[in-house]
Image (tube, each protein chain N blue to C red):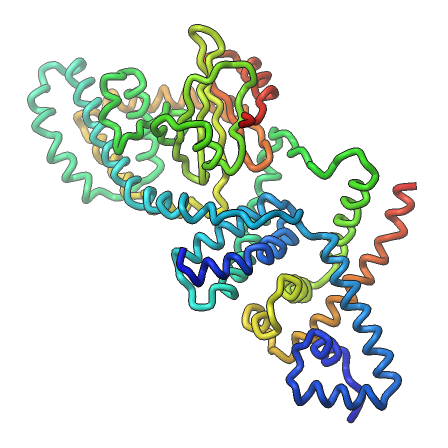
Amino acid sequence: MSHVDDGTLHTYLDGELAPAEARGVDAHVAQCPACRERLEEERALITRAGELLALAAPPDRELPPFRAGDVRPPTRLWWRVRLPLAWAATIVLALGIGTYLGRGVEQGRRAETAADTAPARLRALEAPIRPEQAQRESRVAARGTARKPAAAPVAAQGFVRLDGERDGLKGSPIGVDTARALLGGDPLAVPGAPIRAVYRARELGYSAVVIVEQVLDSNTVIEVVNRRRSPMALDQVVVTAAPAARADSVSAPERAVPSRARVADSLAAAPAERAAARLSRRFANLEIQISGPVSSDSLRKLLELVQPLKP
Amino acid sequence: MPQDLAEVYRTTYRALVRFLYRKVWDAERAEDLAQEAFVRAVVHKPDNARGWLFIVAANMARDEARRAARERRHLTLLTAEPQESRSATDEALDVESDRARVRAALDELSPRDREVLLLWDAGLSYEEIAAQTGLARGAIGTTLSRARRRLVQAYEAGKPGEHVARG
């Protein structure tokens, strides 16, 4: 038998050589000092490479419970099934506000507007899909919600839309322990400020969003948003949600005037929103953002202060 | 989670984290991605869960690297993530520099050699590595022998400079 090549030696040493071939290597090495020496060299090389890789191993931790399994599949389901419903509710809400405003502006057309509403929704189903506009539309609707709290209960599935700056859905209050489980670690908050409530929220691109409401003084409440990034490409979900674009076509004649005015003021507000969006920082695997009715300087300082809420 | 997948989780999770860690170089992210891979396995119910998991993990790590590169360009305002390993003790610094050196040495390998080496180190058999990489089973030994040699050489070559830097 000829000398054994490196590949075969490694396969042999890795215990991956077929038994017949392994016996051949045994036989050859037994009578070939050169190959015997090489065998030992390769053995040392394999050991050394293994040691080096061990130097670059993650910290050895206990096997965690399969945490994702009980939390996330429902999450996915929620997005697939409920999101379109939430959008649908938003559309209805937008219609409602449009109608409401229309009443004020165009008193004379009230009856006509009401009569138009249902056909408008039907038309919407056949309309071309234009996501960006729809999103803007729904933000406009959300703004309306914020100004008119009476309209809020219309929101879908127990989630109300947040203000226009954040494209998420705020859920019902949760406990700090639940927040911890969702985020896979302690939620962050400003130390020393009493916590009024903790909410769960939904936001595209994040596997978990927790909002901690803290009271700075009697009339100042800030929100510390803890976002845990989803490893999944949730942008795909945005595509799933595209039917929401139908909201666009609902902006049909009867509420064109008020809605356009609102889009305009949302555009005017855009620079401020961008500034607010930049007030965020990473903390381990969380993205932290603070918002509230205080100056951006104060927000920035508060952001520096945030600490994990220890149990 | 189905019984057999629970078993795969028990036997493969750590190996998957180790594999991912050498790609994203962040333990937390590696664990998140591993969890995510298992979530997808629950949904997709692949026949060969183990092999499937490593393929999905490799893809996620690649996407992650692209996304990280994008984020580095965009999110300049975010403060740097505190590195837990940056403790003041010499021992910690040594561990950190060893890790950095191995990482640099791994970067010297060709992508295919590195992949094969990392998969082997994660506990996959030649058969499984061949299935995953598309290499012939007979080529795995040669690839591994080359990868191991380059890794050790690159690591040793990285040493002197590092000592100068420390002195």
